[in-house]
Image 1 (cartoon, rainbow, N blue to C red):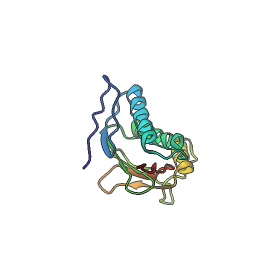
Image 2 (image 1 turned 30 degrees about the vertical axis):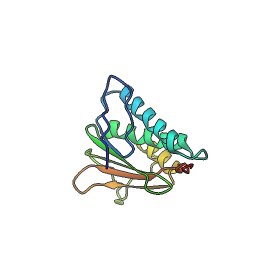
Image 3 (image 1 turned 60 degrees about the vertical axis):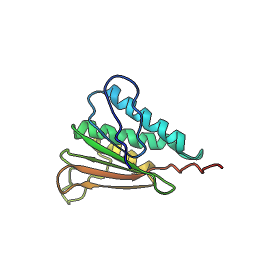
Image 4 (image 1 turned 90 degrees about the vertical axis):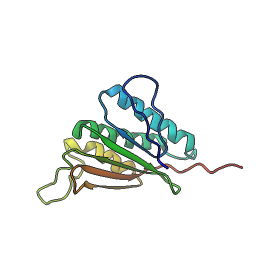
Length: 150
């Protein structure tokens, strides 16, 4: 059902799997190739009125956050069962910092600007810390599936 994408730091461009892939980013060039493959995948299947640029920005911010704050393996899953795709990112990093009140940060501090951008462009955003360690972000992308033509 799910295909695992082969993501390498050298060699041919990665092919974005339609569903799920695990990544461990080692350099900015690899991250750029993965982001481009994600955009190319959406361009193939998204309706013309979709905001693929915003979806790519969301993906790039989440990918950048994994590289900066949760180095090591991360899992990205794209579920496109309905009209809009949902992207789920999980990692094994330290998780999101909590404010003194116990809530997650508001995204406007120096280290929260990426998530503020994600929040601004996403149709829906849910994020939190996993019980077994690490963090998760679930975001519905501002993209619609292209209608099949007969």
